[in-house]
Length: 380
Ligand code: HEM
Image (tube, rainbow, N blue to C red; front, side):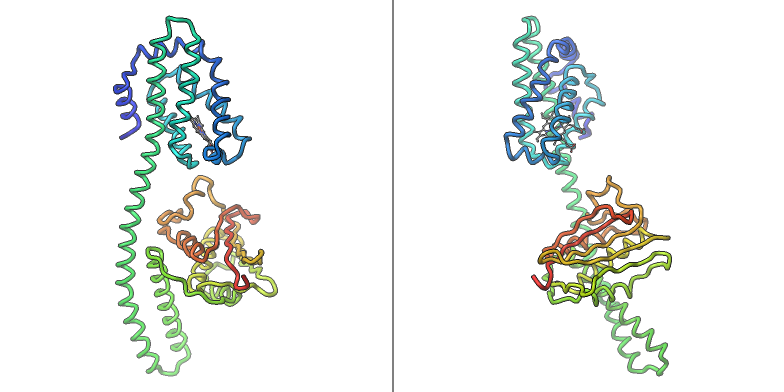
């Protein structure tokens, strides 16, 4: 249900009307003194409780600013106007809590604290306000809580839609993948026949080899796609990083105007992993980096050992990651490329996680994006 409709429905349900609006406006100057102490108690409670405290990602420093926003929020409770913009602001606050992963049960108890403190403050006011004031305040707090809780439902529904979309997509990928295996198999067989009948021209040999390599690559990609939708065990082995990188770089197409710099050190550390999948990781990251750095720029791949792990960094001099999309970067089907399908980084993360590794995206000193992967080394 759209927020504005929900707002109308809630107003009707709790019986919030013009009379309540008038009462709240009348109360506003009389009750303001209670806002700051209520905000103090509110965050003292949050800080006391370890489950709620973790939501304060920037630590206690954040509390000062949050007290100010809470006081503003209380001010709006009493000042209105209780119009569509009001409910949108409330929904936005709710979505902020959903985004930071605050469990919704804290909203209910936090609202109880506010309710208790403000009702208590009302009781200290002179008589004519008391009963109507209680009712009006209870009604608007009920509405605010319902709107904020509704944003959790919105989030759940959005996740369900996404999960369904992914399931459909998974089936589609699965069937396309299987269908492609057949023509590739035919190409492979014909290639075998052609190889046995070739005319000795080295160019023919070169092209037959090239077809063979590309068929192999296409098969690998299908395997990776099927891998994204199913969990397949890794074919782990000791992987020589330099060989892996040489292989990827040989197949990577990039314009001469994009400088590719490799900093693997004297003796690049061996990795413990699935070479086909790790190749895909490097290929996807390097292709993205070249794309971002084009038409003119630089891409750097570096490696170093950190404790028992190997850290691989792929960075570029492109435009960098827009902070607005950073959170969705590794989601399947999310892409900023006009012709992309949004699988590259999702696959990368999936493969890295299967190797019990991590991947993070930050800003590079080259100016663009910097992807840092840590993988267990063969020495660990
Ligand atoms: C009655 C319940 C609550 C109300 C009315 C409320 C109100 C607000 C408001 C007005 C904002 C600013 C939103 C914006 O930037 O647009 C906010 C953000 C925030 N609230 Fe609440 N809050 C409530 C419950 C809680 C609780 C229980 C916690 C527990 C830690 C919490 C933690 C936060 C944090 C961490 C942010 C900042 C998120 C960010 O900007 O990254 N809130 N809240």
